[in-house]
Length: 179
Image (cartoon, rainbow, N blue to C red):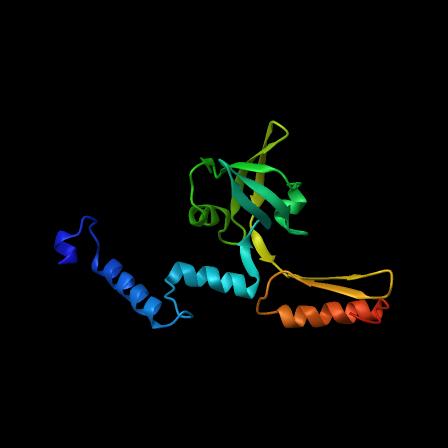
């Protein structure tokens, strides 16, 4: 009946996907259905690595505002700065694009090229970058003046425990007496 009379035409595969989403949505508050793209995104988030240029950004208005380049990433090495505005990716304006489309444009196979147009202080800058495997380690440590080790965990990922132990060992060698 849906195939014949619904206002939007749906394939059998789309109907099956929607049925699975609905089934798991009502199962319990902790279950959800992930298609292949969502599963890939989840895997990247939890593994803490992906192939891209290494820039944290947020859509704002018609552009993407750079929050920060990741240390030693292609974006960092090329001179992309916090506060830069990405206006075009691969020659395509970012205006009106959803976050999923933007993510697809920014990521790609390791070694592939990415062209960005960035607006900085009213000037358009062109960047040609090569995608690399980006590691998003989210455990940072700092030794405070009172020999207290300060640890910050930004994201919980597969290797967060190992990264935390390494940071604690590094701070202990530097003289941390407490955390």
